[in-house]
Length: 150
Ligand code: HEM
Image (cartoon, rainbow, N blue to C red; front, side, top):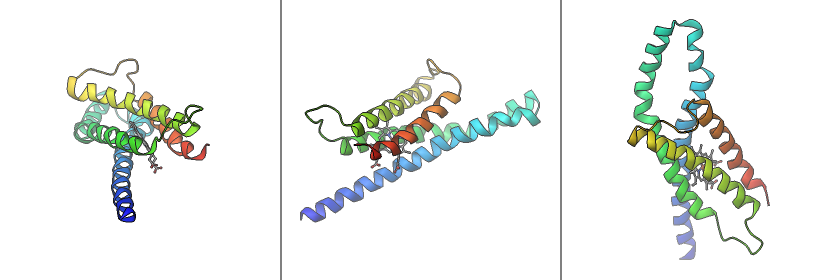
């Protein structure tokens, strides 16, 4: 009985974990392509051609990438609710601290994306795509590092 419950939990957790990873792939993947390659279009195209080419790509990006970010955040909230655990007597563990920092950055990106998508509010504080790109790289580092502390 206990074993089958545990198995059920593992299947749900693994599925949501996979959804998280794929959503992150799509969101982070776009930021990587944008920051490493699309910004270079102006080297070979004129200003007008760059604007046209960029818009042709962005039309499709807007249909997918913002939703991938929202899915990353929602699935992340489920994952954190399962792995955060109790806070010990001597405060947060290193794992919990790094996970909280990771979740904070992820939520920041999520709120930013949500405002853009539903309220057409352009990002406060940082406008370029380099900022979310940098945060994604930091988040990915933290997501691996957190399991290797404590
Ligand atoms: C754009 C935002 C986010 C990115 C790029 C991101 C990225 C990642 C990556 C790469 C992993 C590692 C997966 C693996 O190695 O198996 C991960 C795991 C995790 N993420 Fe996120 N994440 C984001 C948002 C969030 C948010 C908002 C939360 C919580 C509120 C969250 C909670 C978690 C948890 C708890 C894990 C550990 C799952 C596990 O290994 O069992 N994530 N995330």
